[in-house]
Image (tube, rainbow, N blue to C red):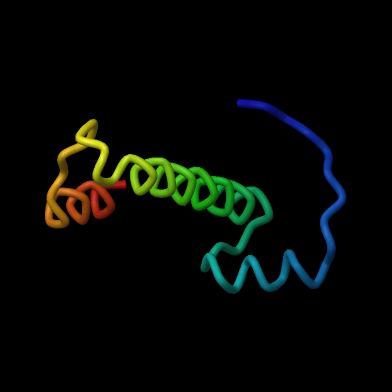
Length: 68
């Protein structure tokens, strides 16, 4: 686990805590980073749509999302 020091805008942190439901800075940052990575994975999968490389049904994709 990495340790780092960052400067975060107070208003943005407050909004992020509310949006994530987290009460700690660590939890908020981790949840936000997880969401960024999840969205990137979805973008990558969508970019492959129709290519034949990935042949997931909408139901299978939804199941993958639910298991994250």
